Length: 103
Image (tube, rainbow, N blue to C red; front, side, top):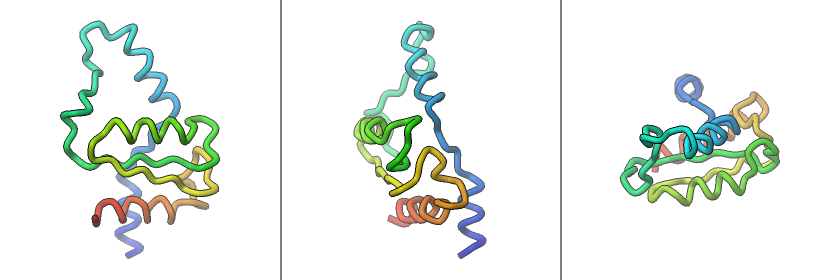
């Protein structure tokens, strides 16, 4: 189990407030809409993770992001800030991933 958690964690790509900035700025700079996401076409499962105490990307933004996808799971790591993948909350983060993957 520990090996599986380690393998799953090594594949994680946590998003950040900078990603939201990049997405927002593309509205003005990306005239050809190369970064456009057609949420209706995304059929694969999407996991949106946030910390309940996140001040960089407020949990309401994570909720709104999850609502855009048909097949999204929102996981709010209780007590965590933006660093939900840090050692203190890593097991809860991996648990959320395992739960979604094994649905």
